[in-house]
Length: 194
Image (cartoon, rainbow, N blue to C red; front, side, top):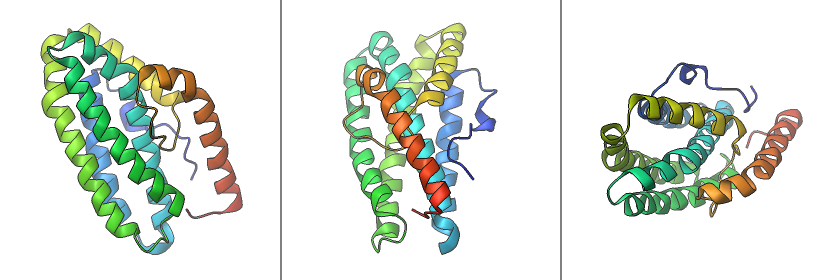
């Protein structure tokens, strides 16, 4: 199973807040899948989680956060807090991605990562998404949803801490995405499980 497949359940979502809430729900479920997966299937489940987290955060950084900065009262502070959370989670996710599922710390790190990611998602839902829904029109949310889907199609498939701004994603995102996708293909061809 390749890591470059689209997430079909999301293709029909036309409101950016609904789209991101659905992705948050999928992320919660994927953590459960990784945790419950038998040892011989855990790497595949983890790769899917890594990919979803990477493309989801990139799209938020490129589309949602810049819009929130402009539209929300105190938007800069709200977004800066979310970016700090994202960076911390990306660092742990990168370490886990590089170490692989065979690492003796994997399950303990997965518990830490789950806590960080779910706390981050809850903060986004409470402080950013609720305000975005209140301060944007349906047309704006539809346009952002289209932007998120386009950004996800071109996003890196692995975490890259330090690339949390729209500018850095635009400048570095495409080369990183190409490198990530080549690495994913090589992993699949070589039969690597991590």
